[in-house]
Length: 491
Image (cartoon, rainbow, N blue to C red; front, side, top):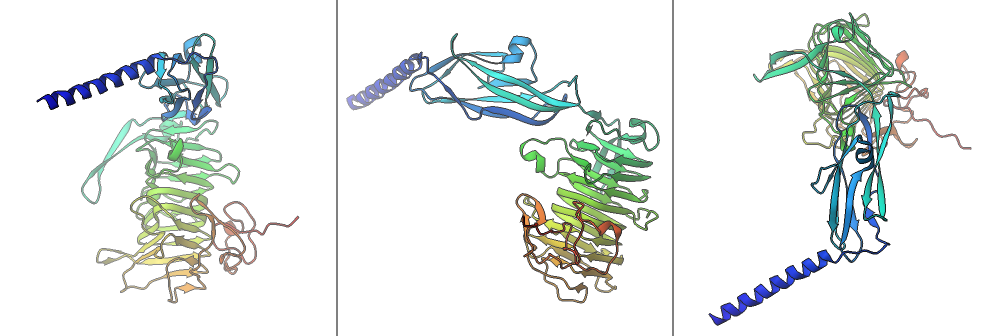
């Protein structure tokens, strides 16, 4: 019993000593004139902030380098406290008031500040930098500040006002929330103004012949996209002014994160769709075109030229029973790159299908399917000429084919990761094409040591392939893939 009481007394003394020491430490403030708070960064920047839409939250740490406790008399955003307005808001270690007072930081300790931005409107221009400062007032004589800035843009905003319900093959009911394109943009085939970006919070439903012109920038929220119910979609960018279709969020990893919006859906009732010089990123589907969409005067339901399709959780291009033409097309980092199913046909010149998809569920760069269960649905013709079909595994082409029917496919002067020996592959290679940097999604050819360099077929003729995806004149013979390699000229 005496031993237990003795142990309890020792513990009680130790705890009392610790509490007293802590109290003394926290009351022993550093009052010297050379206190300098240390920040984890000197500027907090937000890139591409659309007006009225709150940003993601960023954070910094503020560290007290002193051997004594420091009391910061106040922490605040300069514009918000002194002028009553700021695009920025703070959370100072849990305190969200306009001015956090008497913030105590222990010796060699730190605390967090969380920052968001929400720009209401830019009065003088469609875009510009909005700035402010976080002020740290240690006492009346000592003050530090940290810069805040956000690159803001005014935009057009489009919200859904109707919905369409349908059952998928598995029986699940899906809902598309949309607005009518013609009503939103004023008349049949209403033209999209290009002076400011467009923010879509639902699908833009197209039922006429719509042209999206060079320089248009379309940003999509979750469950948003383009839906071509009938009529046609004609995206006409240029090399210097491509049409951008991407996710609403552009901060941090969101800039390349797959699956953030729906994609482009083209129904069977549409006709003669064309996409030229577009950048389509970060959706579930890049382009999905349903069965038996009517071909245009060119003979194709969809033509894609000089276009980058990247970062898709499902498919880069998905075509069912359709005829597609692609020239100078990059499809990269998609769970499934290009899938042609239930027959149809395709013609692809100088395309690069690169599958280095890092998320779960990565599959093939190319899938060819010519049946629906036991029912044959043969291709009329599928040709790949001067194309690269490569990825991080050796199996990049999925031949899901009915062997009882003819197989009218051809790979001519291509580089494929899939080892092949049959007569459907003419002058094809299985060597690494030597991209510049797969991790940074740069699929240009790195040097003249690449097996793609000057190994393309010169006998075909297509005016859209005379220049590459970057508008570079092709060599003779050309480099295989979407990008032409040009040797640097020695000075």
